[in-house]
Image 1 (cartoon, rainbow, N blue to C red):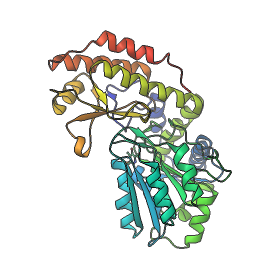
Image 2: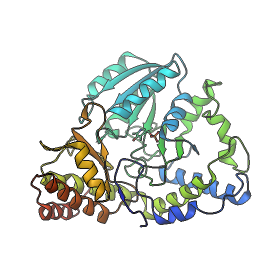
Image 3: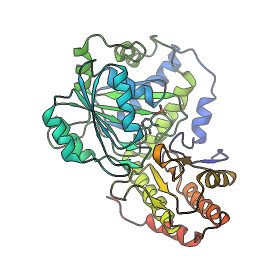
Image 4: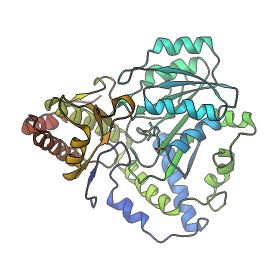
Length: 389
Ligand SMILES: *Cc1c(COP(=O)(O)O)cnc(C)c1O
């Protein structure tokens, strides 16, 4: 890859050369037939990735816009939304919903732990919610939600399941055709951004609505939004020679290539690859005395939040590591200064991660701590032999 640095933050993530190449093609008109064909292919590829028989929207914006599109097109002002939050990004739905006058209830977990499902059950039994949001992988904590438990529970109570896949889509299973227990227990809305597990630069908001979610949009009639009203975008998603608002032409070039790479690899392979990455990164960092915030049973395949051993200064650690070409992110909120976050998703390779483990060891030694780099790298390799189911 042409990238000079290992960008191992939880998004943006390393961009493959072929994606860069696609993006520097000449900018065509946004309703040009040649561009319309590419845009359409990108939309179809997204549908294939998520196995949806509904509609997919790919528009300029970031993951947060995708969150907003998901909410504003399904839940009206005055209706109730239950937010299931495993951290900072789960909590983001609270303010977002409040901005639209939606009534919010929240079930929050302790950071690094799963939420208490009985609490969710209780809330669902006591209230009538229009929808429930789940953050698939909370990027602040590295915790992945348990969809097998949550989706059937929510659907039993008749609410829509809105899944924030910004740090998961393309890397952790999100199959919109999958039934969780009963025939109609499916994920209704999946939203993501281009720059995380899909591995395209930031710039696109991606949202998929199944037929149930599309029906919910119909029932709302008017929504308090214009740019993110899916009804304004639907004609364009069907026929991109039509105009609503100018799409990010070169971003679509890049996204189309990114999606080609995703489908070429295949979803099952990607899910396994990411699980292996997660295990390998966390088990090798444990060799350095670094503890992941989330236990292995709840940890996300795409990123990890790693607590520093005593005596490591966050800013010093990350800047020394950056000088060696490895970029990791600081932790958020109350964990700021106490942990760092490392992404292991998208176009990231096993070789890149092995290099990062080595550089992290060197950095710790530089900072005066002990680190057995050989042992960590052995552990890294061994993790790839562990069977994944
Ligand atoms: C990054 C992220 C977001 C926000 O996406 P932006 O592209 O920064 O707007 C939302 N949810 C999750 C889980 C994320 O990781």
